[in-house]
Length: 96
Image 1 (cartoon, rainbow, N blue to C red):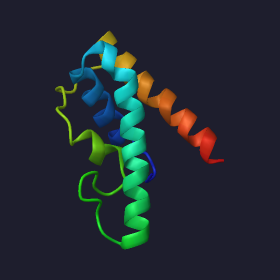
Image 2: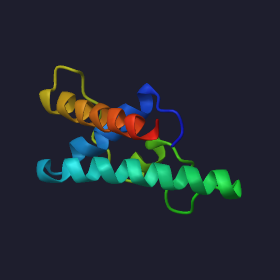
Image 3: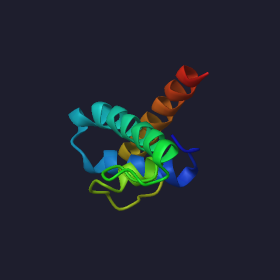
Image 4: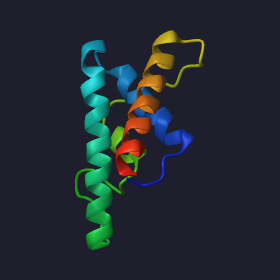
């Protein structure tokens, strides 16, 4: 997966916020898998993945409906943001 920036986390959190609560955990994991798959494809072929884009978390998030970006006083958005960061931590730990 491409290096993750603040915008990637925000876009993924917005995709999660637009999803039903019970689907968020699996959706987050799926977005990380898709970004990694796309990154490998781009690395091997030099071409964008036809479905998942350039290997960034933002690209796979933007394939979904995104909620408008709220402020951090929105507790559900904070939970979604946290969920993305938790998955990022796990992803980084498994890559090392």
